[in-house]
Length: 207
Image (cartoon, rainbow, N blue to C red):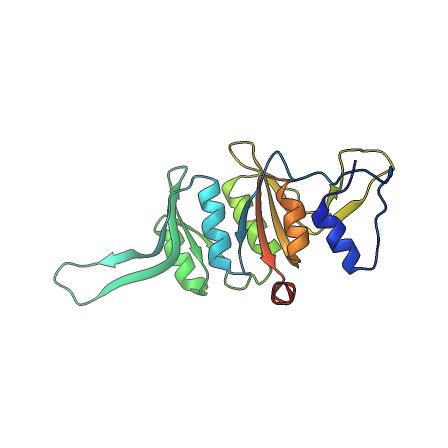
């Protein structure tokens, strides 16, 4: 089999020339699955919203959670939650701002389960915490993608750090934890069903 043109182009940038044999082997065009491509730009909000949507979890963004409200009184205690939703008969919230331990404990006392993510800076850490909370299994080890279908020695293997998981529809999803060049994004687009990625801005500008 010939390797995908996107991977061939990427390797040429690294001064690696692939020689197809026999010489007249025609490069195969992309066929079969084509991934849904989601540029997260490293934005926590994009990643969280997409993971909730993939799971089919309805949510409200920037909703107000009322802890205390007294009719006719000027004193009301309302907390703004970055994301709030109901799951398994539990009121849940995701905190990105850093509400503080006292407020989170107060929300817990009033029946809210809060996922604190304000100090989580990595895509990997953020994604795995959301996936774990939603009860979705995942593999966060470096993932191997084969250039061609041959599982033997005659292949080119690309190893990419990221998180792989199956959603409720049994579709495969991959979240990249590194910035990816456009050629690798194109390569992955025919290997999986959904790709959450960060595009390499330098590569984009040069193209």
